[in-house]
Image 1 (spheres, rainbow, N blue to C red):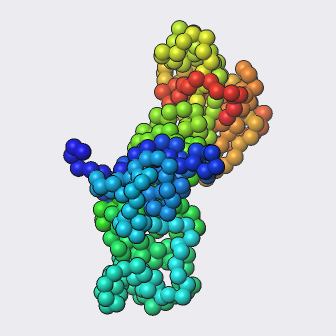
Image 2: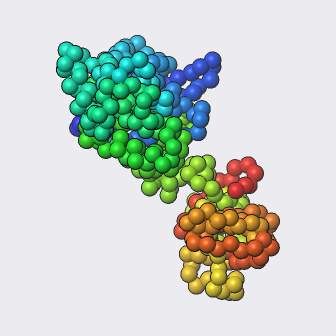
Image 3: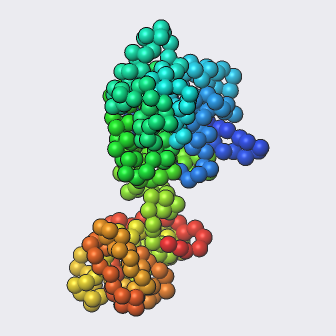
Length: 365
């Protein structure tokens, strides 16, 4: 292999249960100090992929390499305890009958004094040294999570696998503990593969996102690219609400009540879905729908009638029933704007923020 091998290199993993393929040709790499998120809905194969990498499940096809060395294929298999892979789970999995220090030292090699010293070093890093001789039930949920982190990094693993490790924490604690955990893992140069079903968590934590669906990785890249250049309508909709406008292509253009949208390379007569997020719909307060918009980016206004408006804190969510076809479109509007139901307003679309995909099934939002 030319150049430096990735810390974790997963190649064409396949796993079947009862004739059903739950992991379908999954390949990914993670470098030292990098955080990759396996993101997708429940049941898409994320956790099964993690269990195969950890060595607690066996693939039906594919290979796993660590630092360029094969650790597992369908014949050869390095035992889980010799893979230099740490694990963190949602339930923390602390031993209730052991002190905090003994939990962290569990699984370490060396003399009792050496293990105690290593445990105290890690507890100091997560600001819990004063609790070394307490028991898990004496700690808060956030403190237990930090103990689980200290235990996971104590053996100095090359790779850390994390399966929804922060979902059991309340929102007030989650962001701080999540950031602290990643800072420590990056300091150690650990390659992190984290499973989550929450797009916000993946966007906040990941250097790279691997979006999974039905056992396959359907898109992989930096969070900015995955969010702003989705491969299909479902990928766009996984990260946020979307509005969908159906149109038919003529001469590489799709005509809609909001003007023409480019559809390069799409054959004439093809139905397409124009997908747009609520934050990219714009209410035309200034012109009230009169005449074409001189700003080509915003296109032509179309009229809708307010169905409901909800205050969401930093923005308001307004739902419109459009005059031209009765479809419901959602717009998020900065600051407090709560129009009354029945109020007509003109809407424009940021055409540079739209995605055009071949139509699939019934239109919806």
